[in-house]
Length: 386
Ligand code: NZQ
Ligand code: ZN
Image (tube, rainbow, N blue to C red; front, side, top):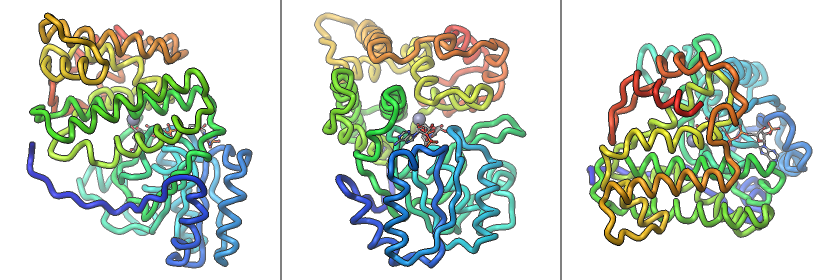
């Protein structure tokens, strides 16, 4: 295990009526003008928006509405939000939505307090913002775990990059499983797969000397697999939705990463696919993971074998580590089919194969904790995904 320093700034209010507990207490510390940021309108249809605005009214706040944050939020939308914050003198940002809304607000919170362009600052000057407008996150779609970290995934349409941008941590996060009950079934499953993906990508990071972090990751992965299967029988199972909501936060709140350098290569490929196709994040990952792992496992065979045994429950009896690793990847492939996620890009509805080369040429190649890929191999992987 690597040495580490650990501290965490996000206060989590989890469970039934969490907003009723969180908002009066937290809003008392916020200034007068609060921007309520949300997506395309699901929060209005579900009643969450009215409930939240009720708490704001009771707290005597002035509400500034910022709507229309799209899935795969754009840098242009960040700029629109930051301009509104400046124009209206907003004191506090309340993000109400899934990963897209929360991520967009993390960068609005940074952009709103500087005249410098955040994208240029981070990607050209390699300087990271240190001052932010305070914000809170109210989660209506779980899976990304965006509410507990300060990384935001933003699409820059001009440069054709979907990239991780560092922004604000939320001062607090509200996780009430009831708020996710209106999510379309397909989004529930793709979100849960995203959680599984975060855990796997962290698990395959280095070092792989079976740390406590890895054992916790195994528990998170087993939990996600089990609870997705519960949902296949009853999508409204509240207990399973509750477990998945906390698993989502656990996979991206830094705990699984303690003492490790992570390998998020599947994410890096999927993000660029998103930049060119605006595809659904969890679905893209479902297609990429098994193919990527077939290319990677020989370089991390012990950890792949351990994942097969500990996560997929495959007995080792007489198998070589390589055979066990292959069985684990087969189990993952079959699970993706079982839960109705796509196995190919064509199943996802992609039609323009020419994007694959662009994705291969532009995606980040990670440290390669398990295996350092070349651009040629990324293209091979993408073509196998078609
Ligand atoms: O826009 P509205 O109308 O709200 O509809 C949304 C959207 O269409 C809908 N939705 C959300 N809550 C709902 C609901 N519909 C009905 N009832 C509810 N309660 O769901 C759709 C998808 O929402 P979105 O926020 O895009 O989904 P998700 O939470 O999966 O976020 C995806 C984004 O997060 C990034 C992804 O790349 C993608 O841009 N990620 C962020 C991460 C992070 N910050 O840590 C990590 C992840 O790996 C990921 O990359
Ligand atoms: Zn993800």
